[in-house]
Length: 495
Image (tube, rainbow, N blue to C red; front, side):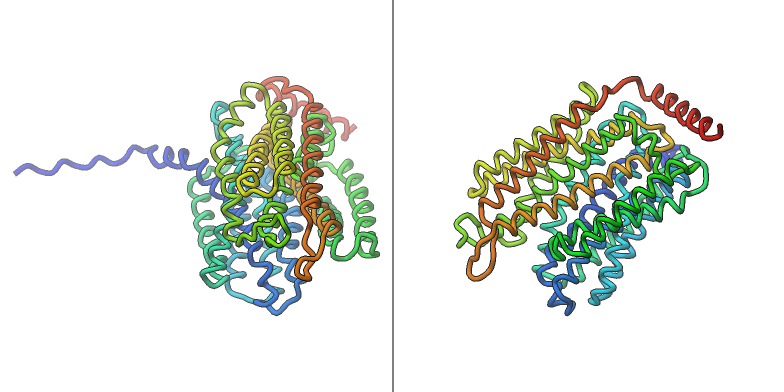
């Protein structure tokens, strides 16, 4: 009788090759999960006062707390990733998000919910940390498409999160939604630890604790004033005091950063036109992009009695935004090819121009559902191009040891743009409202003004992109130049 043939063991490098193949999908899934986490609470907002016994103003902090903590922690965790290891910090950010989800799933107390949502804000650093890992680990021929996909996960996750959360809220207990994100977060932590290699690129030194505290205080004052200005009154003492405090604290922080041996944010790097203008373009693009989601959701849910509203449910509203998310997923490799052929500056300018065209479609017709979906999808297309180009511009302009912190600042600028967009759109819609059934509802003219405002900001982003200096030398040369400039800066400081 023949003996069974022995089963040969797998090659020694099989596990390592599998991990290499899974690096991009694992990092992209983390970015999508982060965006889903930020979005899932939106369908709950109308019902949370009843479910928690809190006021509507208090409930709004479940969104504000995530915004504030994400804005503060993104540059801080980016810097920590450059110093202590990007995978380590990325895993910690995902773990904090997961803990926050579990806390939300276990409670109906509004105070605990707000604290848990603040913990979840740490996940905002997932995308810049992941992009930095991709730069360190991937060869140049794969890097562009991977970075473009990673950048697009923000829109993909937002488009998936709204209908998913709406379905859960409509057909299950609302805690189920957080159990789901908690389970996905735990899987993401395990997958990241197993599949993603720790980057060997580090920037040693002592962490700038004073700089982190100063930036946190300044950003909290700024974003709290922007996000609560409509509720508290733009001319109120609280809002004006917050803005004044932001100016003073951030001015002192800037002065401290210029004198720190190892600053949290290298302001000399930010002052270079290629980096600084990229940050300006990120702020303007974030403003223009965010208005699309805000306005579309309100517009299609407006009652039919307004003469323009469609009276759609929150589930149907999420499905209206879904084509835009699918478009972002499909177009991310196209944007990478455009950047490779024409340069990321061209891709960024083209994306901002497409966003403006999308808002022109929205102004032309905001009554027919198919035109609303078309306009929102065109805006999503432009966002894909712009968001994929921004990290590529940063990667080409900064030394390898500072990519996580530099991309963290770029994401922070997008966040500030989104917060400003939310406040500006709300101000426009509140000013242009009329009563329908005794309830003030924004007019169609108000929506069109919001579209025009966002389109104008998109054109400003296009102009900012065109002023960014050319792409310049190869990545290796830029890295050497960045290192030499850093050495010159250190020598000047010592002198």
